[in-house]
Length: 378
Ligand SMILES: [Mg+2]
Image (cartoon, rainbow, N blue to C red; front, side):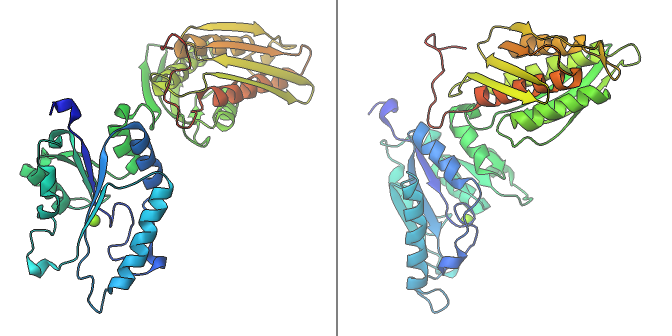
């Protein structure tokens, strides 16, 4: 059998990994670990790992943990998972107690020894568990492990090399296994330091619109609040700029950092909508935005302001902000607004329209890992 035909396996623990409780002996003790469905759903749909459950259930069949108490909830857990397309090839559960000393009990490997054959690719297989005994099992099998735990643990040297990652979220595991994370965790950090500005900024494209970018320019901060809230991109940023000179450098560099962060977070842009359009009305004006994350920067601008300044903020910098963003993000952006509106309204409507168009463009199409281009690259 060629190495290409050998099957990769994810051995998955149950308690502490799929469900929270260590002894699920009634239906009301079923509480799923956050993101287990989303993460395993992504893994199942985008990879070819076999799923094999390997679990110890101490003393099932005793008065303290009856077989009926175990079996009903266990079936419920697996039927709920399979309803989401997460189907285990094999479910292996050891029911003994530690003092029985059986080799079927983790970290013993007797239940899964048959996977150590040429049909399976242990080198590229993983054990996902919440305990060091799970990682010991991984070592015995010649595979590696994900240690899913918030707990601080002293990891012995001989297990360190077995552990591919210790993490507190299923999303991290899915990120690792699915395309190096380009499809799940779309976030990026940007640090940018020049003689004029010092910026640290982070974005999470799959956020809810939380966070603030603070620049020290009141009006710009107000506009960036609109961008965060209406794009639903989480963003946190601190900008220290030479505002004692004027607002030009700080506005420009903030836009460059934001654009760079969005471009980095989009990665190879697989599965995104790519295009977004929005029209936003605000009191006496209407603004439109159309955006295309094409990889090519272009700003098309059809807006004007009735005033030179909004407070102490020069209105010409609104256009400059968007020009800088498009250059760094690699996007086409069309912005327009009715003339003669109040300048504050015009600017705010433009930022909101931009944010909402971007929200649509960066949105992922569920189950679609293709690039939205016939060229195959954006
Ligand atoms: Mg466990």
